Image (cartoon, rainbow, N blue to C red; front, side, top):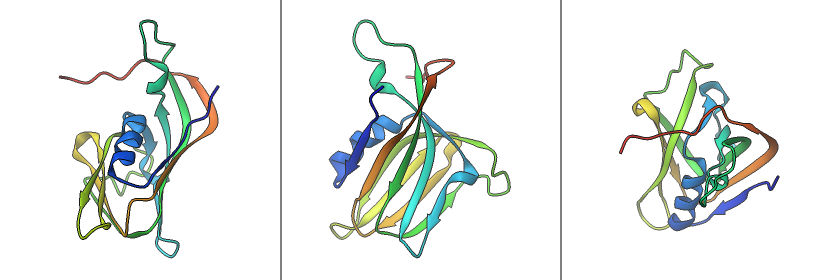
Length: 144
């Protein structure tokens, strides 16, 4: 099993990380903002899309991973279940909205319209697989 480790330092890099975390699931209560360290951490079980390529894709797989952002000045959430910390969230995409370069806002877009907005000094994100992997019950499907 190859463990994925990605770093994003610009918008193009962030788009690559976004593709790898599409359909990741996590518990609302596991997402943390460490204001003093200016770090935002998202532990997740990501769907390993990289195993689903070619004519004969492998078995669907999920991997225990963590996504974290550095240089975060503020974090705001909308539509998240603050009183239901055990609720499962499904991450759809990451998006960067530029402000005065290199600063901007990184948006974490979830199913059911939930969003987290991170005001960042610059893009500095890391995605790391932590080692655990297992066969997923199914491959995520999206309406076109």
